[in-house]
Image (cartoon, rainbow, N blue to C red; front, side):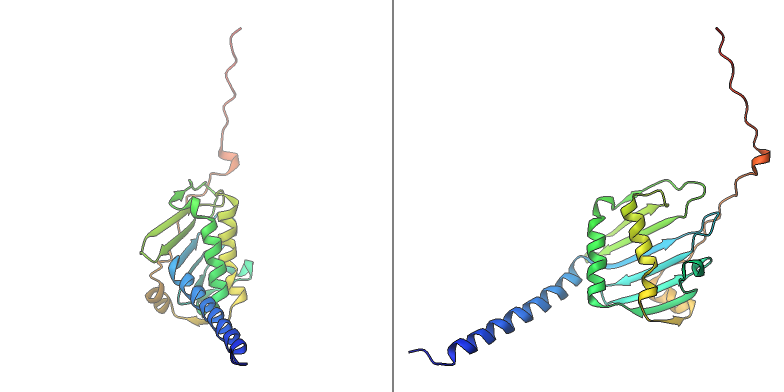
Length: 195
């Protein structure tokens, strides 16, 4: 005959098994797809912010806000912080949705903000998306979402050398020649067709 404790003990064991296996699978998922995401945005002829960021599977977050960052209410300078596990999973899910654009690039138009995202997976494969704000909406919105993460996090200010040592991101400003003033552009009238 079964003991009167059999059913309660059995249910407790099942409960422990499922709760532990769920934590393990989340941790394993966090470690399997991406190791880190690096993003950079450049200036344009308007007020596009110069930013760079780094997120890794150890939940570290580094951010640089340069010129015009304050216009988007972003911190200016070098910062570090920590993200929570669910935010890393959300970031991974958003990145997985972009996988059809991996290794894609779009030409940078004259006045576009240069954008670059690097996805490094657990095999150290570097998948890259680059272009400007003319890239597909889903990619552009992902970059804007990454740029706004500092608003959700508690960050501490660090030095530029600590940022560079931790992330190996070099902040570069792409210098574009400004377009000529409209007064100096001469349009030649079209040639009349002979009838």
